[in-house]
Amino acid sequence: MLFMRLLTNRAQIFADVRTYWSGEATERVTGYKLEGHAAESNGIIHLLNSGAACLDACGECTDENGNAIMKKWWEVTDEDIKKMTDATVWCEAGFDNFRGGGFSSHYTTRAEMPATMIRLNLVKGLGPVLQIAEGWTVKLPDEVSDKLMERTNPTWPCTWFAPRCDGKEGSAFRTAYEVMQNWGANHGAISYGHIGADLITMCSMLRIPVCMHNVPDQDIFRPAAWNAFGMDKEGQDYRACATYGPMYKSYK
Image 1 (tube, rainbow, N blue to C red):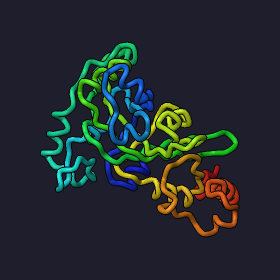
Image 2: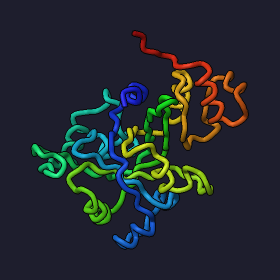
Image 3: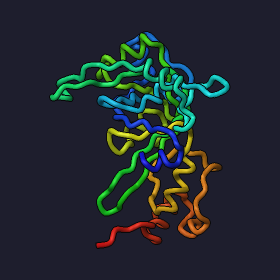
Image 4: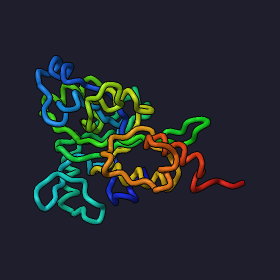
């Protein structure tokens, strides 16, 4: 999350990649038919953190054109802070997760915003590899969101996410279900905007292979030396990173 914050100068959402709701399941449970990006990805992923997430993700702040946005930290005004805190309620923490009690922040992201979800996995024998899923937050009707929230925990901050999918058989991005199925574990860091191309370039600089992404090919830049490591781009990435080694090492 730190290097995403440094890259974007915005607060980052940390969340559990909790559940997948297909279009069919959503309609069966709530009577609501998914629309827009959620329909295109044949479902939504429930990003739900146990107790806290950045309040910027509520979607109440807007730019000069009235579009929902998560602002760069120095652009956040006192009025924005009031909007975000007014959109947040502080619930008694559930004793099943927080035995010591306390409070949990709850809001629902009530806006469609471009977003990029990542996870850095540490694999024994391989090292760090990065997963990237660009997509959009999804605004559901309140009654639909509330009904789905009851299946998990209604006291936690809630964001519905639709990754950009390609519908291709065998692809990790065929639908939102395959994205969740191929995710490394049940957590992700989510940033405002589509920043996957920047992350891929940064990873090549740091010699971290990208094992899963949905960034358009025309947006990707890796060093020209990668072309000497084969014709498949992701295979190039693994071989080049292994050959050149990590940019930073720990020394005893």
